[in-house]
Image (cartoon, rainbow, N blue to C red; front, side, top):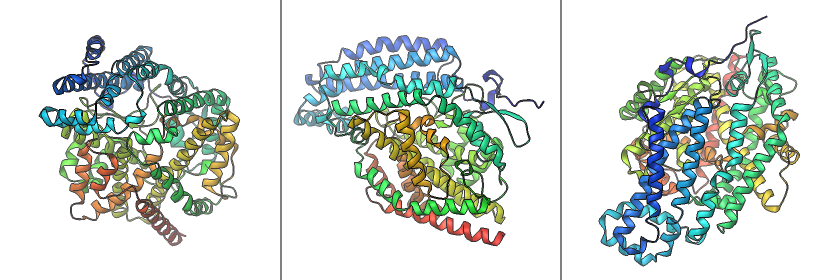
Length: 604
């Protein structure tokens, strides 16, 4: 009987492969002390209520007090979240995370009066405040963002009631996360060598790239068997969360949840519609790629579990985590020495938690607060895909680093709309580097395939998610019950429409919606698609050495939220209110698809 490969428990992971959270709090006792201080600070913020009309100095003190509270609260919350995510089975950190969430709800309730009270001030009075008090000038854009939504802000009491119910409104999302990351038990299957291996989120992704079809099929069917058994629970959590989005939009006088979600960043709804239209128009390109995959895999039927294995033969390039760091520094040289110096800080100062362990949150992300390092969570496996993941998340973290070191706290973050551009620009530059340095036709074919797969996953797949998300919000708004059967039937048909006639309509894929955390993020996923498309244009400018391109790009990374996202991108050289950037991205996909087809012909 072969021995099962098991994930290490958290305290067995080498220290140098974990993130250093002691630079936030030296101990959990320090966290508790900060928690007590913040409870007192929350009370003091309330004392500024009904003072905004007392003059510019009172207005300034209220703003500073609220931002100071938010800053410290974010640090506390991030510490608790990261501690929880490194081992979601640890009850101590589950409790700390719950405490931090509760405190965040209390803080939101305590400052909920601020926006309605700002809106009670006339535009003339606010303008007078800014003209007479120089210390207020830095907050001008911050206040402009609030006043732009005048008609959508409720009374102070109504906003306080909604803020106070924050934990209740977000309960479905938390339930999904706990169930999906901590309580689900996946079965053990055989890997390529016949060893028993326990499925996990990270292991599943790795096995989907396996060149052994029986392994892919087994992993696919066994994973979705688990989700199928929980479909009613997941339909309940998702339906409840969608209802919250729709309710929140309705009471704030928006026409839809989408309008409310996009208005937070002043993104026109046309940006979302244009994305769906352009992707629909170019679905034949995806169908063509899928047909090529079927031909090269030499299978009579192409299944969804065949969509991630390399079609160029062997798995190709693999990188250890150490090798991946060195390759990252070489690949991203076009971004300049200053950018590379930040990457070295990430590697040398333990910003990254790299190894998968029991109970660790699945996937990968970049996180952090204004006064912390921009941390990265990984679940590393030696593969080209994980090199791309590392480069992607470093794009986020360097963006955070530049923003926080160049902007005051009030503008020390950035919208998700901007975030995905930084990460996927890195991915595009990595692809250019690999195609420039790898001369072996088989390796180049693998890289091209990986790029096309990445494009498929980032633009086509995420737009598919965005379309599903928009559909279920619209259906719920009409009063349609979001049952598991309804969700699964629609998702199955949508998946078939995207991937085309060459893919078998596997019954298991109908349950994919059950395991996608982004459906709980409120119109988040479309930004992967728009971001990757914009990044394609920016990467081309940088790699080709276009005059001013790198400086413009670095200025974008340093801008934070000091201007509206659309305007920040215009300054960086991409107008995302037009469809051109999307069409240009599709041209790159088609060009690299052509190159792969030609290269494969030479290998036959």
